[in-house]
Length: 275
Image (cartoon, rainbow, N blue to C red; front, side, top):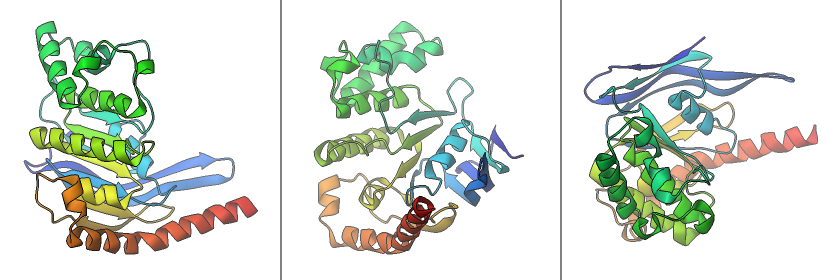
């Protein structure tokens, strides 16, 4: 049985996956979601994983969060401060508390740690400002749009000052306009903090826009097919970046590596339905 660990790596490495495999028991037999992933993620890196549906991207993220344990292999996260959480997670769907205001949602993690009220007010106020939510601080989730709810989730995650930020397709349910705006806001906040980010997406465009490095995963069982370095300087302007020929060339190259995996995943899905 594998395990998920928090330990000291080196000054430059933040997350290490070493031979990580995850197998689930099902009524049809064992199902291997992730197979033999070995990967080092340097501190301060915005690392993106892209792959077809069912390739184990979210399973990998859940293991990094400690929500699942590897069947084999280890996951090590270097801790910098014991008074901060190892990670904070932003989910694909709505994950904020419906009975709490925007401010209270963003303050939740800090209050659970017993942070002083004055510090909570300062920290939460800063991140509500950075996400454009200051005037909605007393609003409740049912009064917010989908994009605004995700802003609350992002503010809450950064406010807790985790060692690692884990993001599971946080913008996938949004329309293109809101998605672009939130990508820009996320990049602006990340430029302030340079948190180590592990970000899951189906979108090659999003991966190239946000990432420093991109791991392309194979169809089931999920393996590392390629690691791609993103050469674009920071800070980045999302629209200006997407207008450059180099951006289009990199998207095209990554899609070329991913296309066969997407087709293989679709073929496997079709075969399953046929059975």
